[in-house]
Length: 71
Image (cartoon, rainbow, N blue to C red):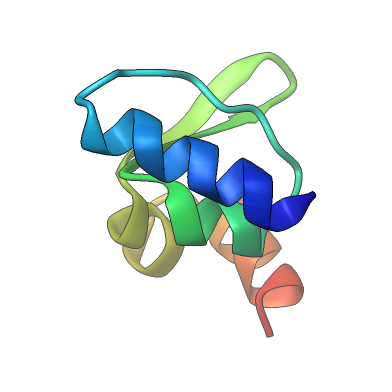
């Protein structure tokens, strides 16, 4: 099923369709997302290009989370 989902996401991206994908799977998000909005307690804590959020977020809570999850 994962391959089917990835194929569908790539098709949507290739067609220029904008969409919102909600996931707790950070490695999956990193693989498919152009932009990331990291939400905690109902507040957007970090938002921007995916690699910027994953590697250079200015929010210490988000940075700490990624350090633990993306080892």
